Length: 278
Image (cartoon, rainbow, N blue to C red; front, side, top):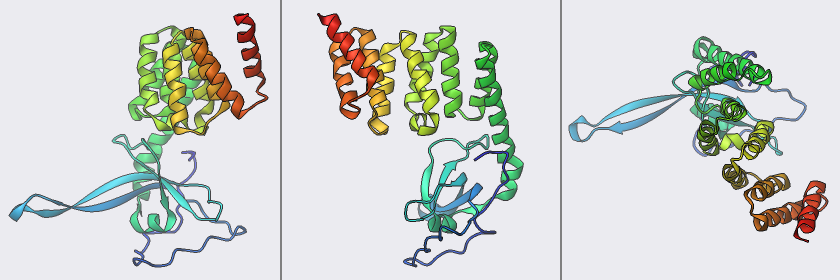
């Protein structure tokens, strides 16, 4: 969601609970325009705490940022819910919830969104914009300050972590960049398609900074949670070559060429290795 856009809800007010086993809502016709759900919502869970005579029911309320995904091939609607952290910023993994279940289990929190969530999301967006501008201009210490401010709002923010890591690498501070590397490989969201540009830039910077072991682990982690990609295998091959491991370099070039037999850079690299071997 662009935090500069207003909150929109699929329908006003809290949805009425649906009976167990009730039929699901039919897919919306393609020619009907439907408002997308986006904003702050809450869910409640009743839990039993204590034992014996002290046993009692407690209502636990959680707050979420919800944003409707693109409809599936069958037109089914799904909402992605993400926890709101103690800074009132969406943070952590997004979980898909079918629309009927979402309308049953989640309640809109319009006032909370307008007073707390929207301002914080806007602040985070503006901070990241300043950080990226500073890094692009080579003002690395100013960029570091802005990225750290962004991480103060959301320590799992992918753009901020990538940006801070790239800033450290540009300054030659490989120890701190290594700490960011450990954080990034633990974040599944770091390998999502929308962060592809930053992902590639960080991997290349790791390799060029001499952190080839980390570069190999970084790309291997990407292969664990994404579809096989010839570019990942090629980049792993490059990192192995710079580690002096030509056998694994060839192995990964072969994997890249299995997926893309006409990949020119991989073919040229393999030809170079053959000539080098005599």
